[in-house]
Length: 202
Image (cartoon, rainbow, N blue to C red; front, side, top):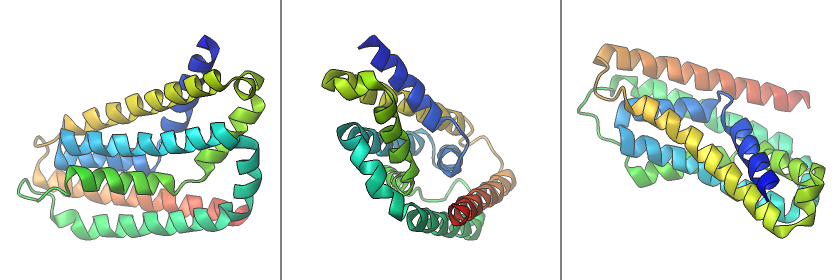
C-alpha cells in the first residue's frame, strides 16, 4: 500500500509539473482574477487527472488499445482549442484592468477541466503505469491508493501555481498585466502548435 501511495504521488507530480498551457492558464487566472478563481482552475485540472487515473486503473490494458487510433485527431482538436483560447486571450488583453469582471469560479473550473480533459495522452500515461507496475495490477486497494496519491499530488502542484499567480493579483500595473496577457497567449499558442505538429509526426 505504501509503495502504491509513493508511486501515485510520483506519477501525479510527473504529469502535473511540466510547464504546459494549463499551468500558464492557472498562473494567469490567479494574476487576473485572484485566489478563488485560480484555485478553481487548479481543481479543474486535478479533476481531469482524477477522471483519467481512475479510468486507467479500472481498464488500463483495454484503454491503451482503444484510444490509440483516435489519439492523433484528438490531439489536433486539442491544439485547435488551445489556439482559439490564445487568440481570445490576445483580443481580451485590453481588459486587464482592476474593473474587469471575473469569469466566475464555476465557469473557470469547468473551462480548465474541459481543456485538461482534451489531453488523452494523460490516460495513456496512467494506463501504461497500471500495466507496467505488477503490484498495481494485482490489488484493487493498491490501485485506489495510487489514484488518491496521484490526484492529491496533482492538486497540490496546481494549487501551488494558483497561489503563485494569486499572490500577484492587484499588484501588477495595468500595462504589465496587458504584457503578461500577450506573453501567456503566445506561450499557449506555441504549445498548441507543438501539440499539433507532434500529433502529425506520429
